[in-house]
Structures are given as structure tokens and as C-alpha cells.
Length: 307
Ligand SMILES: Nc1nc2c(c(=O)[nH]1)N[C@H]1C(S)=C(S)[C@@H](COP(=O)(O)O)O[C@H]1N2
Ligand SMILES: [Mo]
Image (tube, rainbow, N blue to C red; front, top):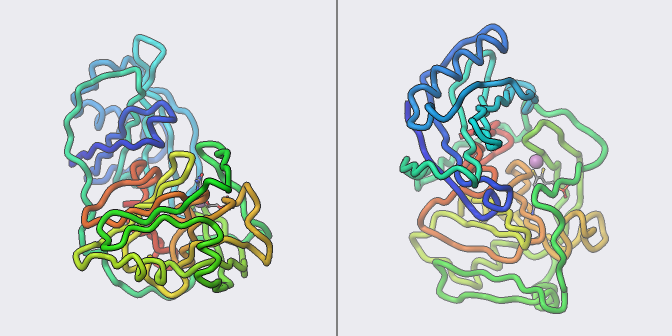
């Protein structure tokens, strides 16, 4: 078993001190009780097992058509509990995540997860397996809807770049608009056909900023504390956008006004809404969902849902 530890501002805002993500050899199970037994075995190998008095089942949820997420709670003697989430594919668990609440200082020192610094360039079929089409995008705001004063809003591009940028909304419009019509895929299993987004080509923006030769990742931050990590190669695709409009209108507040990112090939969680900062980096860093076990790249056509 190999465990990693992660944390970020978004998780802290949700009252999570750290996530411990354990890759296990693979436990087969036949029912929830059986799975719970497996979770207790995994737990017993971890340094914080002694504070858990009881494990109870919480809920489960399908992620696409071939994964299930099972949630349990590890109850302590106080009111804090450790969240336990098992990522299951066809009745087999390969990954278990523990969310440690802010109230528990366990002095953990697992290493940080480091994705391969050369993201694979594997080609997929272009179609997104395991998805179901629905008419409209479901609106998500896991950390709430931030209040943004657009007259003061700027998009910052910084990190491993020769020309850091700070652009107002009108400066972004002046760079010229491009449109993309694309299917939009959420990792939870829904997709929407033919959504039109318009905005500034991210490739153009990154070229102006002059990305360093050894840069590999882009980490995008939202005004709400949400973040996501994107391999530079995906960010540089011709249809990756800083989107300002959707279906011919300025973005609705709930869809990320004044600006959101759009990566048509990647699952929707990478398309950060209310984006304020794009950091170019040589080093991998988990964003909000990556810290919870989701994939460093997240290509929908290769079904890259989990790490
Ligand atoms: N800031 C922020 N951006 C976000 C999210 C979020 O919760 N907060 N959710 C992501 C997820 S999981 C998806 S599927 C899409 C959904 O886009 P929509 O809310 O515009 O439909 O936004 C992504 N960007
Ligand atoms: Mo999503």
C-alpha cells in the first residue's frame, strides 16, 4: 500500500485539514458489509487507526457507468469524523481516501503525490465512454458563488513565464475572440452536446506570456478557492479557451462570469469558473478534485476519471 497526502485552500475552506490517498493492491467484495470489512483492514495499517472507534456506511454514488464511490465515516470519540471514500471499479477497490477534518491534528507525514512530469500523449477515440447525454449543463459551485467586482477583476498569468500578465476584462476582449462548439463532459457521468463557448485562445495567452521551456503544468485558481491542474500540452490545444461567452451571451454568473476556462477534451472539473489566476509550473500540484483522487489529466475520451 502506498499513501500520499494533499491539501489546498479549497479543502481548507471545506474544513478539511488533509486528504490521505492510499493506493491498495485491490480488494474484491460482494456487498457493502464486505467492503466495510476491507476498509477496516486498510485503516488498521494507517497511523491514525487508533482514534477511530467505529466505521459506518454513509452513501454511494456512480461516477460514470463503470465506477462507484462508496462513502463511510470513521467515528472518533469526539464530534469529528474521518471521511473514508473507496473508489470502486467492477467490485474491486484500488484506492481509498481519508479526509482528515481541521479539528484533528494527527501530525501526518505521508509524501505528496507527484504526477509523472511528462503527461502521456496517448490518443483516444474522441468519444467519451461511460457518459449519458442530458439537455443542459448542471451548475456546480462546490465552494459557493464568489462575489466579483468586474471593474477590479483581473486575470493573472504567472509562474514559469518570461512575461507575467495581468489583464482586465476589456484587455482580454481586445486580444480577439474565438469560438468553439463542443460536447461538455462531467466526470460524474453527464454530458451535454454542442455547447458554444467564445473567448480568448489560451494558447495565444500563454504565447504572449512566454512559457518557460521546462514548464509542464498549469494550475488555475478561482476567486472562490477552487483550483485545478492541467497538463501544459492540453492547455496549448487550439480549442482551449479563457471563455467569456456561452451560447452567444456573456457567461451567466453561475457559469463563471466574467471568465472561466474551457478544455473540451478534459472532464469539466478542469474548466475552472470565476478564474483569476493561472500559474505555469514545472512541478505538479493537486487542485481541489485531484486532491480527492481525481486524475491529473482527466481526458474524457480515455476515461481518465481517477488517478
Ligand atoms: N470555481 C469552480 N469551478 C468549477 C466547479 C466549481 O465547483 N467551482 N465545478 C466544475 C465541474 S465539476 C464542472 S462539471 C463544471 C460545470 O460547469 P457549469 O457549472 O458551468 O455547468 O464546472 C467546473 N468548474
Ligand atoms: Mo463535474
